[in-house]
Length: 423
Ligand SMILES: Cc1ncc(COP(=O)(O)O)c(C=O)c1O
Image (cartoon, rainbow, N blue to C red; front, side):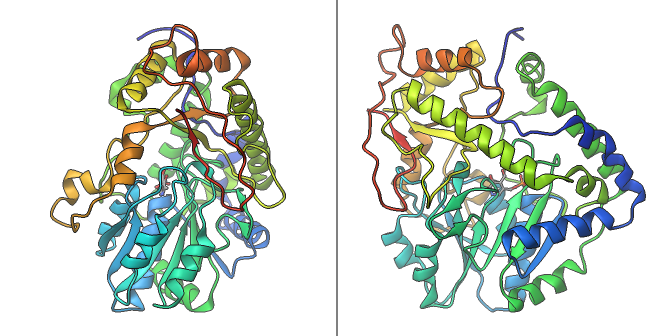
């Protein structure tokens, strides 16, 4: 355990006042949940809103609901995404089908998506990874012919805006995660937005069977959230990082996660969520802009234009090769710079899925696993951290395998590449 300033890969804002008054929620019936639902419905113009205990619980419920209304069982997901996604598909009793991902956009390879989507597919998950908006409209267009539902995985992108609307409002149904380190957090939590009466009806039927969480779980979540608020600070984050059993930053495939309704305490903690979300995303965009400038990516898309405002949950960078990535992650660990290696394998290579998933080549996803790092963008990132990151990623004396950044020209198309390539 090294006592030093240590950045977490991501961190969300939780005002102390909100944290302290949240236990009031234990005695308030459903008042705060109703308020939260109304606020969400208004901001995202959703047909209906459902509040759950986590993002994966939300996704599981969506999938079960869609499956209840169809004989189709195949769910198309990106070959590079959070392991919670296939976990939810398997938990819902459905079949995972992969589509490769373009390393420059982190979105589907659309030629491949076209060949994967057919009349047996129940739904496709269009995913806004790291807060960058995916081309949901294009996915919808490809799905329309076969009447396939588009589920928007906006777990990492609450508050992001694309040319066609806010993340979470473009698909047929969407979900957000309120997990630790997301754009908005309540410790854990999930939100479903439905945009059609048919889907709302199906989800309502499933939601009726979802139990309230036990009080013990509610209180544990509050305590964990309070500890997170304290230890996420760069002056203290060295402590939890030095406790390997906490498994910080690990992504796991597992299906025995609970599916509960969101409790009133979490909903109370989320009072003022809309301003908090906007503030957090403003902070992240400002940090991302500084990082882009200082790391020599100035010409690249960090400007917020009229049609596209990513949420910059993290700043993804493609290193030159695997050794450059490993070297950057190792040096970051040594100096507490918060660089993350992200998901350790493609979804194809998750051992528990070996017998469940049709083998297909996913070279784009493999390339991302080998080269992608993400850099923190949260409000604790200071100029001293940016200097550290600069030294690690492109500075003098860095490992020669660590590349310099390329100044890319901004592409004016609405869905320009979102991953900054390093040469
Ligand atoms: C892309 C994506 N989808 C789904 C989830 C699941 O959300 P949760 O962690 O709230 O269960 C996550 C969580 O990190 C995610 O990153």
